[in-house]
Amino acid sequence: DIQMTQSPSTLSASVGDRVTITCRPSQSISNWLAWYQQKPGKAPKLLIYKASSLESGVPSRFSGSGSGTEFTLTISGLQPDDFATYYCQQYHTYLWTFGQGTKVEIK
Amino acid sequence: EVQLVESGGGLVQPGGSLRLSCAASRFTVSDNYMSWVRQAPGKGLEWVSIIYSGGSTYNADSVKGRFSISRDNSKNTLYLQMNSLRAEDTAVYYCASGFGDSLKWGQGTRVTVSS
Image 1 (cartoon, each protein chain N blue to C red):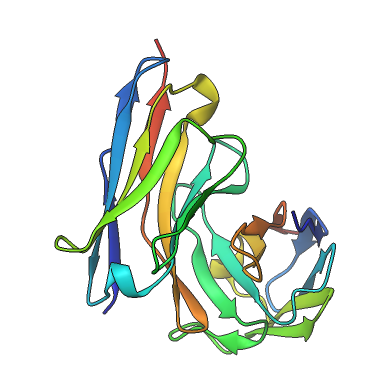
Image 2: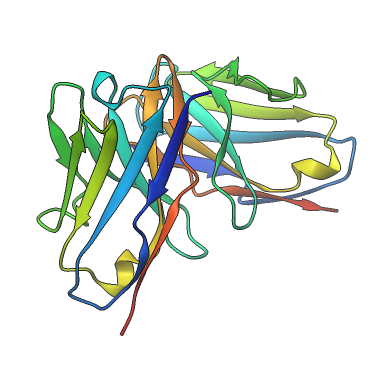
């Protein structure tokens, strides 16, 4: 199985901050990497697919980059609605695996 | 708009069975690979099972021999048959699919295994 190491596990930030979350697969996954936002009691919401493609309807302050074994999600100008938990996911293999999540909290 | 809608969750006793459904609209289940993913209370996301367009299926080790994924092409619906349920199977279950290079997810259905 491909292990996904996501960091940090918790992040305290203020409205307007630039925030970066990292995801490192245990082996190369090319660019088959997705990022999700999840709020309590809700389904994960797809933000980014194929490492850097923005899902339709997602604000442009969200961006993704990377390939192979290192990926980042950047939120440029954190908004009140962005305080949530974020997950990365690899779909390079059928056995999808996920990062353990990053909780973005209000500083 | 493409939609995946899960149903069939509920409260079941340990050792019991449940069948989850995932109905698709504006999307053909048999043309795409379809998966089930679950999330236990307060935990992260765990892949459970997949069925490919050609019919091949795979399951996570944690559910092997107990869960079975299938689809009904005439109803454009995905299923997850869950047998011999355990307390640790308590979770919200999501169906999800590849969609071109992207992914689509449903809103989930809650399964609680408890006596």
